[in-house]
Amino acid sequence: MAAKGKICVSIAAADPDRALALAAGAVDRASVLEIRLDALTRPVVAPFVEQLEVPLLFTCRPSWEGGNFAGTEEERFALLAEAARGGAAYVDIELRADEEFRRQLLDMAGKHQVKVIVSWHDFKTTASAQALRSIFEAEYRSGGDIGKIVTTARNFQDVLRVLTLQDIAAEMGFPLCAFCMGRAGMISRIATLELGGFMTYAAPDHGPATAPGQLSVSALGKALECFDEDH
Image (cartoon, rainbow, N blue to C red):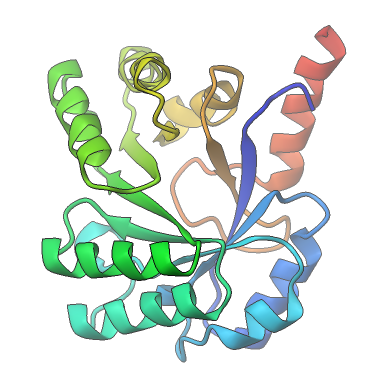
């Protein structure tokens, strides 16, 4: 592919066996597989590490940031720490998470050569350019290895404000995932890679999307092939 960024296929299923099956079906198309621990009725890490060859990103998204995990921060940290110790390539922690838990996870991940994505999501709207820049700068200062800023687009102006963050990220040398949710934001999931984004996210072909407007990995691949043909 001409695009330099990674394609992450997000796996969200209640049953671990179903999640493993979806993940196995996406291996050939994914640069990274995101295992959504918050979607599992019985969150486990080891089976995914043991059975999947692709680099794994473990996420345990809390209900207060659009996820399904309703337990305590201590329980959530324990799952992410298990992933960091147990063979993850990446773990995701929210910018709005408890600062002490985030610091502890960063320390642990560093000891195990695991990259930390510090993320921020808005499922309702897209903030102003100034506010988005402030969020980016907070992620940059957080100590994380990669930033992630995802908003909900209502129009193309929202999309452009988010994609412009890639210019700032390039200037500061900080890898960034930046795109928009919703119908208006679908194009940004493709464009972000062409603009230097670190990674975009897709749904497995026969599994649920984890966010509004998320393309299937096959649809995303076909769109990116169009760019390849132009080159």
